[in-house]
Length: 303
Image (spheres, rainbow, N blue to C red):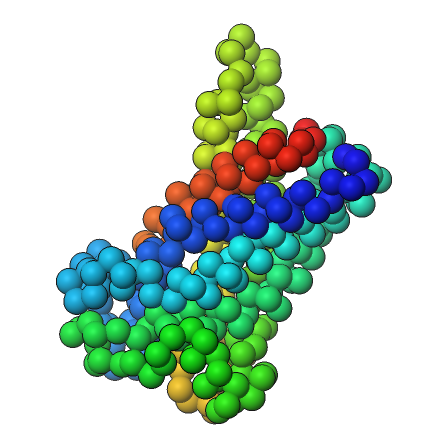
């Protein structure tokens, strides 16, 4: 890879992040509502992801599913740009500058975990605003709640009442989720991508752009499912830490998970699993297909 091509990974990643939000944000809204309301001490509010979705559509329409999308678009575009850029450059450095040979697990895992830990500092404030916007609404199943007029107002009010550090509430949970999750995601993605390309190379099958899209869909989608299967409990803890009005509630994700387990058992720790997995495959498949298409257009060499 040429010395001046490093920025191209960041550009391809940015485009990838936008496509991920377009496809995945409605599922994320449902997940956040379930995590917020179905883990509280006074019991279940929604019977499941489908019930939550129908309630949102009935009371707020499609717009309700995209509540909090503005900070999500900004946050995900920046996050995706950084994670692909940092991961690719770190991987290249660990491979001695050769980005075209197959990466091994001892290179993929630290590269992805490092990228995840860096982006958590960007992602935490945008996710806090997104989550606080998402739990607002007029759904009759939960009490009407509308504290903020928009994402900017939410950010300003958070700084006013909690200081700048308030925007980083849930930072430890976010860092753990992103470092562990991205190590799992990129390990799954790189292995599947290499394996599927290898299988096609050894066969007489005609390799086309459509085949590349299919490989991107499978490797990206399954990578996304692996990511969320590994870190969903940390995400549940993060959502509650970021959305609770109780300033005295522990911000330690492990203490929070212990509290959730006492209230709702292991099921509570995996609240929102349905919409999360339903979102993970199409959103991450879209992200990888978009990233690889952009990378090809930008002339990025891939193994």
